[in-house]
Length: 186
Image (cartoon, rainbow, N blue to C red; front, side):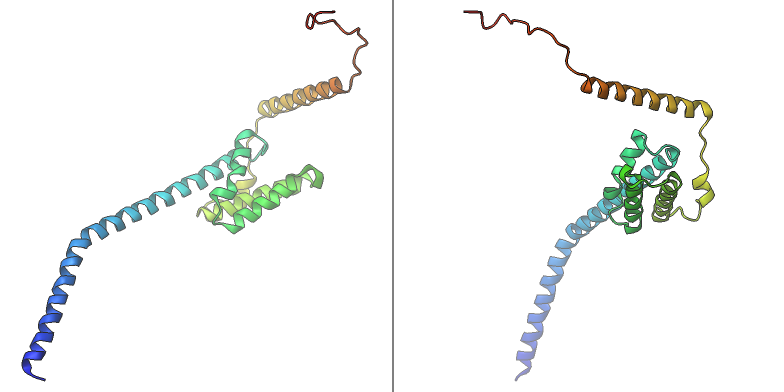
C-alpha cells in the first residue's frame, strides 16, 4: 500500500466528516427548536396538572364539613383523572367512595376518617405534607346559621321527595274518560 492510498482514505474520511458537520450545522437549530418546544410543552402540562391537583385539594378542604356539596362532588369525580399518576390518592378516594355508599352503613366517624385520609394523601402528593397537620384537617368552621340553613334545605328536599313519592303511590281518581274531539264520533 502506498502513501497515496493512505492519503486518499484520509481525504475520504475528512470529506465525510465535513459532510456530517455540515448536516449537523444545518439540522442543529431545527433540532434545538423542537427540543425547546417539547420542554416548554412538558413544563406547561406539569404546571397545569399541579394547578388542577391544588384546585381539587382546596375545594375538598373548603367543603370537608359537607362533602356532599356540588363543588366537592365535582372535585371528587375528577380525582381519577387528575391524580392518575398517584396510586395512594386513588386508593384513598376508592376507600372514601366505599365508605360513602349508603348500602355499606359505614358510621359517620369512619367516613370522616376516610375524608382525612384522602386529604392527607393529596397533601403528600402535592408536596404540602410538611405544612398540613392532622389537626389542620380536623379543624372546620361551620357557623350555626350556615349549618341550620343546610339542615333546612335538606329537610325541604326530603319533604319534596316524600310528596313526590306519595303522589306516585296515590290511586288514580275515578273519573269518566273525556271524549276527545279527534277522531270525531261516527
